[in-house]
Length: 159
Image (cartoon, one colour):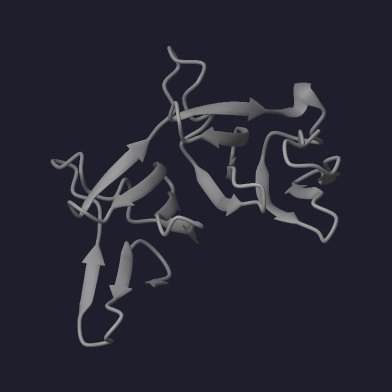
């Protein structure tokens, strides 16, 4: 898997290295990649491909080749907190974490909803650039106002 710098979408090299697929946004197709500006890739423990873009979180449905888009919906408090998705990460306990320009999100795969964490919840800022996990299971979030660390544990809260 490779992204091209700029606004070229996503290039995917087949496992046999004989073919290259180009995934990109088509404004007339809701099953296409949400944006050609790709910031982050995650291949999760279940083999699902997640892509953070300028216009939402995208998950590739390998069975159909269609992209599932997760977007911010102001009328839905369980939707993604912001459409600019800067980083996607899965911790060892399994949750997928989504860093956005409007807070940190923990994705619940059973309900396909998001729990939000923001400055009002204890983060230094709502602009979350990245998240990593240390050897003790603590999550470290980088923001434009410093680092934040969670307590350890499988259901750790990031603030």
